[in-house]
Length: 295
Image: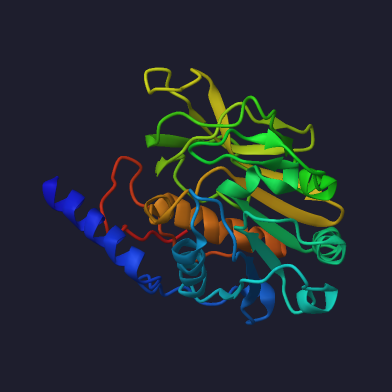
């Protein structure tokens, strides 16, 4: 057991220094005619607790090393246009910062609405897109500015400013609830997260919850309720997957998160997930490297 912990910790330290991840052997998805799915990761700004400089490149590496994706980083989102997005199939949103301006926000909403997709990760679920400011260790969160209504519709949720938060970070089990979704159809029924479990989120009626976790009241701040962890939302003809997971490199290096990222991004881009390798380790294990199973 000690060896497993040491390996896991050493891997995390290595990821903090480099975004490289072990390569997989999966081939490009046949649903894209042999072409890799084109992904644009929206990043380049973050609040004090979600530094993007390590996490965004790590997600890029996870996606590209499957052989299914051609993922690029966009570190200056404000100013991109519909012409920029025309080259991509799906967006991964890991951005916390000032709003992007009318032209860029319209281009992103139109991109998803037209039949493409987006994956929203963790910290984007609060902040300026919801008309909020503050949220530092010494400054309470407050309402300031106008929310971006299209974003609220895309992610299918609202979050009362008095309820924003989570219990103390801990290791917990995530349970897949929706078994007919291509995202998790061939995955084990549970996986382990080492992360923050957001709670008290209000989902819109058109959000379909795929996975949940119990917010243990014995953990400081826990609600004692089952909280949504992954959900999907239709937006026009497009698809959005949202997850509360992905706080930092340790959270993202969990095999369950990497499966969620790769499967969810493929589904958001194409509406399906092709057979291939998976990062999923046994649900009771936190060891590294993960066992790889054929789906």
